[in-house]
Length: 261
Picture 1 (tube, rainbow, N blue to C red):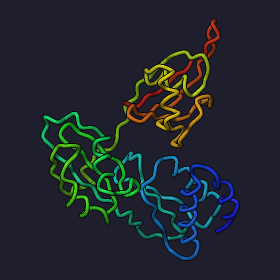
Picture 2 (picture 1 turned 180 degrees about the horizontal axis):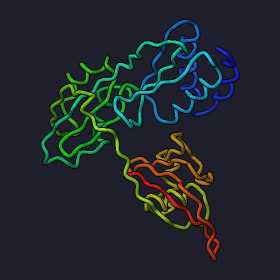
Picture 3 (picture 1 turned 90 degrees about the horizontal axis):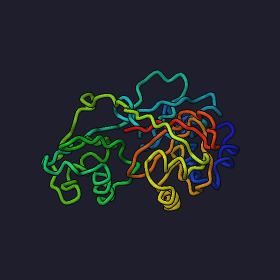
């Protein structure tokens, strides 16, 4: 693979070093003759790494699939240019159903139950919540194991069955625009304003590694954000810095935040 060593050096020592190494290895398999090679489920940040790898080598291109239109977590395929066959992403869906009295069960509850079974996060994709259950996207090799062993979410008994990917509706993003002013464009100030918490709590969340900036862990409260940055706070959701609207008479910076709800 062209420029392999340069790519490895670029990502070494970063939080993405191990992930980048795995993706570079997949791309190399294709360069050595495979028609394609598919990754585990990854976040949007990993897709950016995949695009960077493909940009360094004209022999491969990237395809992504999360099981349905608009999926956030996807599997990436490095595909040899000229290959005209289909790519098998090996994605399946399961439908979880529970008593509607327990509608307060959350995405975190389902995620925790799966992790409690010993299933690696990379082996399943989006968890689509509904009032009386959820749809889980997962690696085809994990389908029978999850169906056999996932009997409860939290303390609630669940029923689980295969689900047709074609039945999953495209993901519709609902956006709430927040126009506010901040003392500075520091990450803790933006997190506080966008998620409606105190700046002290925002700083604590960043220190506790509950905040990601552009899908990457961030530990510095003083990091300045820019237009287009995506910020997530575990348990609160995601938002994007949409626009810097100017400086007020009191010297505060106006920002437009787009929070996904």
